[in-house]
Image (cartoon, rainbow, N blue to C red; front, side):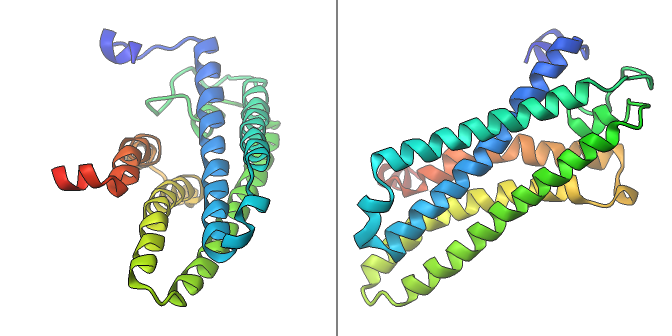
Length: 220
């Protein structure tokens, strides 16, 4: 925001590290919270009689704390590991913010393999969350199809569809950005994909979640 207002393209070393830390922190925490929200919908639709037992206030607090704690650990490891590498290929990033792949391009040390390994572990965990979400929604849609009441079925779909839309937008853009083949990488494509997963989902989230609001529907 400072760079935009003052029309500059500079950022300090410490500022870049802080930006990477908070970006990784909020991205990973969001994925964890989206997975928890999916579990919440699975229990409420597939196991409604066990909802208060499985998702009481204490269980919700523990899951939320685990999401934020794992996000903090994830971002701390990435930040420390990334900025411990020697940067000898200049100080210009081909991106509008401090992104890990762009910073790694500036490193000339072989230790960047550590960061690639860490990225692979994070991708594995991300895919694990994705598989859990897909499996949960398969069970949810099966349960919804067995609901006889049209009103109850519509209520279940209206609960799930905004969350599913946010997940699809967030995961598809993130995975495509980080898992695309290097041969298909270009500065303009990297920039466009980064805007897609870092700007578009947060901008659309309030609109998607508020579609259940009857007053907003009437206003639209």
